[in-house]
Image 1 (cartoon, one colour):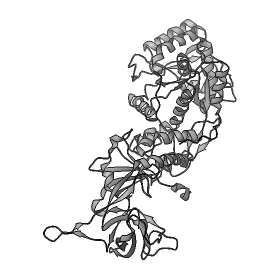
Image 2 (tube, rainbow, N blue to C red; image 1 turned 45 degrees about the vertical axis):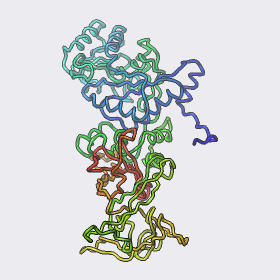
Image 3 (cartoon, one colour; image 1 turned 90 degrees about the vertical axis):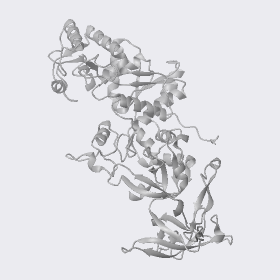
Image 4 (cartoon, rainbow, N blue to C red; image 1 turned 30 degrees about the vertical axis):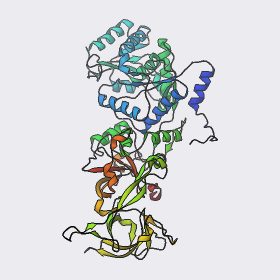
Length: 573
């Protein structure tokens, strides 16, 4: 239930801008857009942008378009288009209209010809290296291209021949004619079009010239009447050029606003580096649960609610900062604690035999005793009474976590130890009496006794025990492959490397450990189709939050660890 007396959240600077614009009558409703380039899978930074764009439109009764910035056919693919749409829907958002920058190629071309006719664009034959050298530096002005003063007629002829495919890649570009001495380097005759003889995922081979981002973006916003073109801070120096193109063309005046991008420690969010991790096999794919991609978080067991809560917590700022990864984990723990049903699974099992527990009945020949089984009641989720209870089988032989037993326990060790009474979750009080070991001295079996009067986990005489551990009955346990994922990088700033080194050297060698766990049989009955995104999420009691993986089958269960119950990295740091 929501608190009625909760303090009202202070408006962020984008909300203030929107509310002021609405009150002044600049617009009657707002229109935002989310404009990813389909050259990779979306990551958690894109999730923040999605939440901002769709969230603002929803709050103020506006609309959000999805527009694919598909102006570079060399790097783009329909695989990425499909994944982006899936990720947005999984987060719980839907767009008003779907567009592509390629929808506007003809209009953008016509506007480019208009700028040529106005003497504001020209065809340059210089190489990219020559253009780069001619731009100068922040302290020295650039130099005019020797082709800068071509006539309008010559520029139109060359530009049309560029479109017709007469010239090879790199032979010519179209540049805006602004000011080679401008203090903003973006204004030093930026490139508007380059030649690329490459197959486009939507337009095929129709085009061999493609617009640059700085030319296409603002005009695409204008066509769609975007009132608030919301970008990350690195685009702030692009804003004057964004405005310049719109002003010179005399088209609908969209406007750009910038916010701080999302930076999280222990990860990288460069698409180029994420692609390198995939292509060079450091991860299993874009949806590897260690990746910071939205599909990676989904496969790891994160929920849309937890990611949106995380984005809401970090807020919308004007200044870049680094967000601690633990805040992301806190957000998923908080949500899963409310919605994830509890199950028992033992990840590092050691056998326990309760010597005074009944062995069971013999078969009709008087041999082969059938293990005695009793069913105990376990709570599915103490945070949600409606989730009810389940029956868990219990018997003479159990599996417990190896770390839950010590032969000689220190003073404040409250789990199982020789002569020390401990509670088995939902079951009985037991006391370890002796152990069996192999030739190397490893414990292979713990022998215990139990108190039958403590069924359900409480003693009728009122005595208390300080330790409670989980268990799984050996005779009904099901095996499962459990993938213990951790942070992909071992250092807080994996990009911070000295010359001659790469971010790959900072990979965490312990980011994945695979174990065979013993699980209660209820986990074998998981029906993933009952869950909205086809992923069942559980709390393995005392161990952490886990989810079913797409590799899981009825004959081979596979679970991924979403996160531990507590921030284990806090102790490491």
